[in-house]
Amino acid sequence: TVLGRLLLSDMDAAALADLYPDEPLPTYTARTPSTRVQLKALIDEDRVRGHAVSQGGFETGISTVAAPVFNEGHQVVAAISLTVPAQQVDPARLEGLVAEVKSAAAQLTERISHLPPRAGWPVQAPQRTA
Image (cartoon, rainbow, N blue to C red; front, side, top):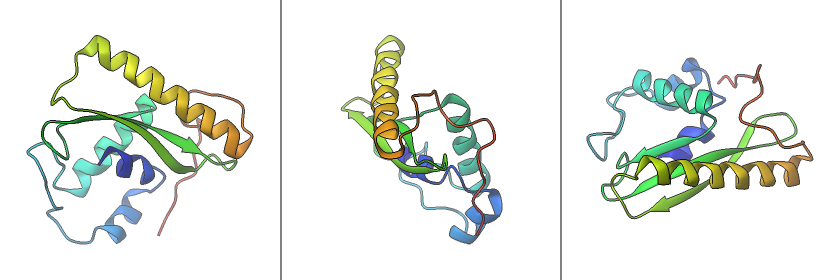
């Protein structure tokens, strides 16, 4: 799920291999990653964007937008999401949903960690290892 990808985002490839030793990974739709390499690529893309989007990736007929919540150590400790009943979301509508979810995640980050608002991950985020 996109929430799961965000929660795994501080893990390096070795930690993912420890967590998921067997491949292929369970798939739920044709858009679900089936290898650790595919999963890590999605996680890395999410980090670059500062949010995650799944349009039919875990369950057909729904789309989910999620953003990370950070603690004072700049580690992802939670994620907040919004799910809509649509396989695909119009790009203009998706842009607004992303902005809303990222704003909510930034507010939650500020409240739980006392960090000032910011956009996405710190430049040098710590990597969690097994």
